Image (tube, rainbow, N blue to C red; front, side, top):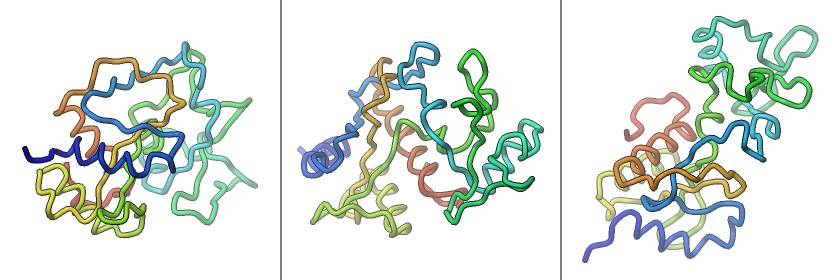
Length: 202
């Protein structure tokens, strides 16, 4: 019987899981994510600082008609820009994201930053032979995702793994199912690595 992508993922995860104690592998049998909002003991929008790039800044401003000064951390009237790929920070007030509503729902859900769309899922890439992590070979990662989603496993230079942050308590929904799992896998990789570039597998 030929190996499928969930099987390849499980075998690779068994090799690397000890290095990633805060994450669990997501397969079609994994309970799906449901944001628990007011019931959640983690409260991502209170705990985490969120970085975003120019594309996300512009999307937030365009979709919701708000000026960047209303949602970015500012210094002397200018957006705080760090020397990072995602240089801006969502503003925080009184220990929470400035865009979080009183009912603990996102006030800009439609235009929210990619980091918020991504969490609590991530895609990690590992070399097939050595199981060493890769995060720099963008073309190889793109090829690996295409091969993983089309079943062309012999052409897969890396093994991509869909993982979830273990601290998130929201994995209480029905199991994903093969189609939903593949869609989540593709979208998570696109959000995490494509940065708006065309050509990532859908």
